[in-house]
Amino acid sequence: MYLTSVKPSFTKFIAGTAGIAARRTMGTTTTFKSFVYSTHDAADATKVLSVHQYQPKNLDKLVILRTLAFPVNPSDINQLEGVYPSKPEKTLELGTKDPSAIAGNEGVFEVVHVPSNVKDLTRGDIVIPLQANFGTWSSYRTCTDASQVVKVEGCDKFAAASIAVNGCTAYQMLSNYVNWDPNGNDWLVQNAGTSWVSRLVTQMAKLQNIKTLSIIRDRDNFEEVAHELESRFGATKVISESQNNDREFSQNELPKILGPDAHVKLGLNSVGGKSSTQLARKLDVNATMLTYGGMAKQPITLPPSLHIFKGLKSLGFWVTKNSIEDPENKRETVETVARLYAEGKLISPEEKVTKLEWDPVSTPDDKALELIKQGITHKGNKNVVVLKW
Image 1 (spheres, rainbow, N blue to C red):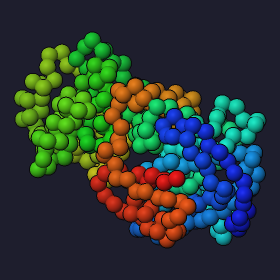
Image 2 (image 1 turned 180 degrees about the vertical axis):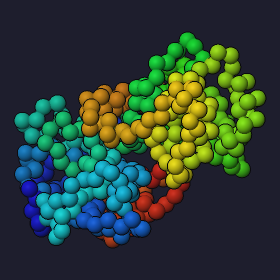
Image 3 (image 1 turned 120 degrees about the vertical axis):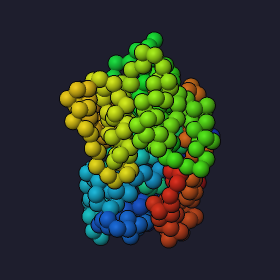
Image 4 (image 1 turned 135 degrees about the horizontal axis):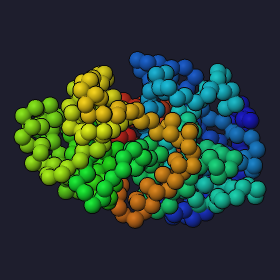
């Protein structure tokens, strides 16, 4: 499918008008640059990456996507480490010496070429991959038809680049497991309240009159962070992990927060350990706890009484699995979340990310690789690589 060497090419593709950007013109090169790996390293994921240049064949028969931005997600790093259960297939079709895969699961692209036989896509459309393992850490990618991507209209590139994981996770956890009463006093409780998934959950919940109790780590500026989560992102109440773990707080203060006739129907756990145990204790009879992460790297311990006497349902949530089993639901979820962003009902993550700029035309490969390594190793805000065209 791919040539093994890079040669000059004079094929020119003209991009259409994009929904989130001005008119752009694609350059005269068909050389693709991708961050690829053929091995794994559990101790240092940066060691397995290299920059690979290649020229796909038969480009006139493929949909060509120009990359606008891609995040560096924990799942991307786990794939490089070799510890993530979902992995792309390694292949020689990229023209590499050893079977390799392109890193990255999530990103946003502009359609710059559409073959005449492909319907439902137009030059200038902004799209994201429908499924994981797309290989988003690349200057360009290709697909065969519209079934492999989803259009996202009206979003900025930071929102669009994170819909497939964070946006879909938040929406599906909130929507697919509990029957909510918008006229009642229904609650959910979640830990890791400052994560972007949690911020999205609070915003989406508020739109449906669902109240949220968000748990965050103890910190010096707790009041400042709690105020922002409540006033800007819609959390009903923010408490600390020490309050979450305090039995007296749960017995005396929590009922005052929840109010009369409260029903805590859903728990969202991405931490594990003691945090998840105390989160589960706050749930009502026949409630559901969804675990979608384990940041503490500690097991979840649940008292038998929660299962026996309260009928707790403790389930795992993995958006990648859901997408494979029901791709149309994934498509609908993406479109719904994109519409919420476009209507201004969700806050863009742009201000909460660290932007790493990559000019794939002029940046030397070694500098580009250092940029990606920085995205892997830098802690704090989510790192998003933004391509400069």
